[in-house]
Length: 381
Image 1 (cartoon, helix red, strand yellow):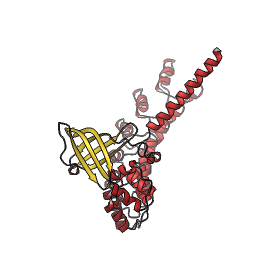
Image 2 (cartoon, helix red, strand yellow; image 1 turned 90 degrees about the horizontal axis):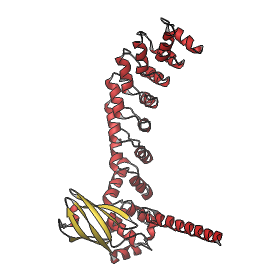
Image 3 (cartoon, helix red, strand yellow; image 1 turned 30 degrees about the vertical axis):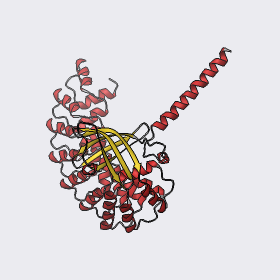
Image 4 (spheres, one colour; image 1 turned 180 degrees about the vertical axis):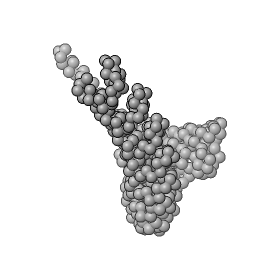
C-alpha cells in the first residue's frame, strides 16, 4: 500500500511539473512570435508605460502574457494628463486607443483600452484578408497601416499581398515612413522591386536605408542588400569604416572590414599602432596581432627596454613563444644587457628562465653564456 501511495505521489508531482512548464512557456510568448497571431495573447484592456523624447513618445503596451511597444509623434497624443490622472485618445484607421493615467517628468503610465474600427476591418475583408484577429488589428494600429498605406503599396507594385505578409509588416513595425524610405533607396540605387519579405528581414536585422545609403556614399557602389544585412549582423558600423578610411584605408573591402570586427580589431587599436609609427599595417596584420594577443602596450614596452625597431611580425612571433617584455627585462637585470630577441625566444623555447640561471649560479656555475645555460637545461639540470 505504501509503495502504491509513493507511486501516485510521484505521478502527481510529474504532472504538476509538466503543467508548470507549459504555463511558463505560454506566459513567455511575445507578440512577435508566430504563435501569437491567433489573438490569444492580447490583454485588452491592458497597461501602458511611456517615455517622452521631444517630438516622439514611446509607449509600451502589455499585460500578463503580452507586450509590444511603438512610438508616436507627441503631438498625435494631444494634451497629456500631467501630475494628475486623466484621459487622452489616439484615433487611427485601425481603431482608437483610450489611455487612462498620468505623466510626470516626461514619463507616464496607466491603463488603456483598444476599440477596433469596424469599417476598416470590413475594408480589409473586402481586400481579401480574412480571420483578422484583435491582436493583428491592434498592431495595424501601432504601425499605422491604413488606407493611405495600402494605396502607396499598390502605387509601387505591391498588390495582392497575403495575410502573412500583412502580419509581418505590422509586427515588425514597417510603417509608412520606413517603407517609403526603403522604396526611395531601392529606386535611387537601382535595386529594383524588392520583395516584402526581404524588406521585413532588412528591418528586422536593423539594416536601415540610411545605413545602405551611407555605404554607397563611402564608395561601395556595388553593395548588395544581402551583404548590407551581413555587415549589420556582424556589427560593422558606418563610423568604423569611415574612421578606417580616414587613416588611409581607402580601398578597404567590406569583407576586410567584417573580418576585422569578427576578430575584435577596433579602429582605436589600429590608430594607436599608427601613432607608434606602424602606418603601413595592413588589415590582415591587424587581425594577426589581435589573434596572437599582441597589444599596443606589449610593443610599447619592448620599445621602452631598448628594442626600438621591433617589427609587428617579430612581436607576433615573440608572443607565440611566450616571450614578453618582462621576460626579456629580467635577463637584462641579471646582467645580459645585450640579449637579442632571437636569443630570448630560444631561451623560452628551452625553458630557461632567470630563476633557473640563479639556481645554477648558486651552485657555482657562474659567468656562463646564455648558450651554456641552455645546454645545462637541455641536459636536465
